[in-house]
Length: 252
Image (cartoon, rainbow, N blue to C red; front, side):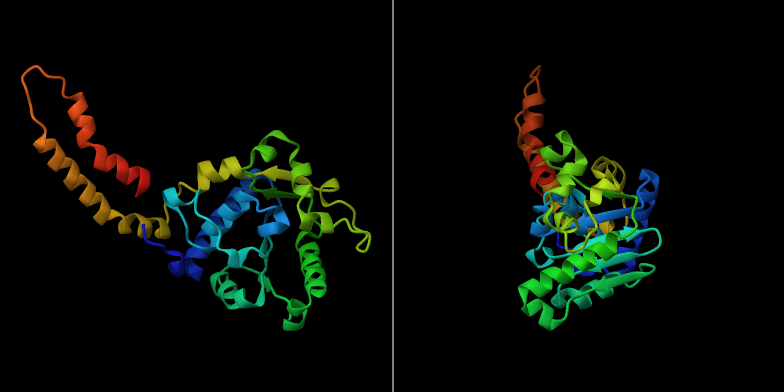
């Protein structure tokens, strides 16, 4: 299917944001926390949520679609009362546009001087993260790795560099997960949110119609060309004729 990330308008992003808010409430979490790139050891679950929420990715491509490296410094915290998005300056306009219809959303960006100085930038990002999670008693994350499924979830999250920074002596706040409960939303996301049909899903499906029609045509042609003999088991020939459709649903 065609890439529809450019069509992920404020209206589309609001629809998915609302769906994520409902899932958050049903899971009993005060917030959904997404930390991308090296700050979460490239947590794959968070990348998938971000692609779905803000880049319009969906359908069968979603779970395997890579995260554009431009977003690797981003962090998002979505609460019932408001949302915060941290990003670099080059992404500010894009993030402001996509979140324009989220109630009480703040996009946090460093100054040009802070971005030019790595220490200043890291300090600003840490303070932005601390502000995001201040006062939370629970939050949800998306952990897909085998480590996240087999180990203590709090320990997995606490190993994230940005979360570790929360415990630095300079801030005097202690370990984030010592005072909050952490909920893994991955199963709910895959069962309830990602299969959900919305306008972006329809756009992606519609873009696949020409390829699907081509696959059907090839399958019918192969079927018609198969020799038929009386009393012969036609299962093998049916399987061969279906090959174009199998390839379509497997590879697109």
